[in-house]
Length: 149
Image (tube, rainbow, N blue to C red):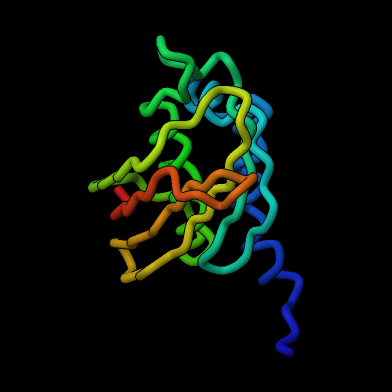
């Protein structure tokens, strides 16, 4: 098993701290803070971020479902954090393709996993999956291309 240095560990923890700060309202824009409030980061390592999220009533659409725009914002932030585990900094989305397969009711819990697919310096790609925590059913899949602007 490969040993990690303290610098490598802290490098991967910075994106985790960024997400945690957003979820507790300590940093970020109001829309980000609202959409990630309560997010729990389960794992953060090079090229991967795994989280759980309990969808609050404040993110409901008129039918009582998790608002798709709020879900997309959350996916964008988690994808950016995953890329930061390899690139060292947060990048901005330049292309975001999202497929929604199922609705999520408020007060349901989901798991979100973001995996870096490629990191080519300025341009990076990440795949973000949202699944129901109770049965693993795929809710949404997003592919993002991000760059340092």
